Image 1 (cartoon, rainbow, N blue to C red):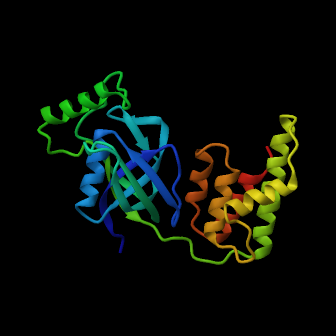
Image 2 (image 1 turned 90 degrees about the horizontal axis):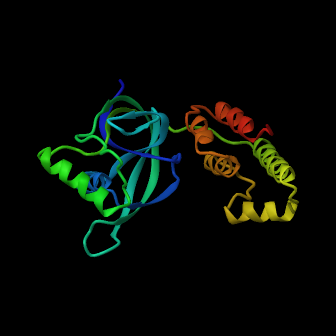
Length: 238
């Protein structure tokens, strides 16, 4: 039986993978409200990559598949409580079944970094009664994490393709890549291993991506075989 639950949605210009850490600085009033609401409950919200071709009430619309994020630490940046730093951990992926629109539209010429933009959103919320969610919510279906092993030959092939891609990109800009530097980069990101896991594949794909949209296809893989095929495709030299 499919279980549908309603969660807050945080559209971002990134893809969060299961079991991946994500730190966020919260400064917009609507996302401060989202964090406050989460902290009063289970600390869970959905992270989705922004869809650049669509919006809802002027706000960025999320992709249909995202990842649940659990707040593991929340800290005020300043004494007014308007800026927060939160540490989160990725959990299960999910698929959006129905979007729930925010309570307020995006103001014209909205600047989320300005004091004026902040105040405009606060005023809109107060005129709306102050009881609605200013952020997007969604009814979602929870998806299972990929279950399976990554063979060492498959992992070594991905690492080989990643190195070739980096070298090709450097060659197009007349740069020279030191092979030892690539090994150092793998070591820096804890990706030198003889016992690869799905999390290693996710991390290597993040290193090999050019834009966040490259990783949405990786997140949406549902089996080990499908994940490896998509990862190889990501590493292929265009």
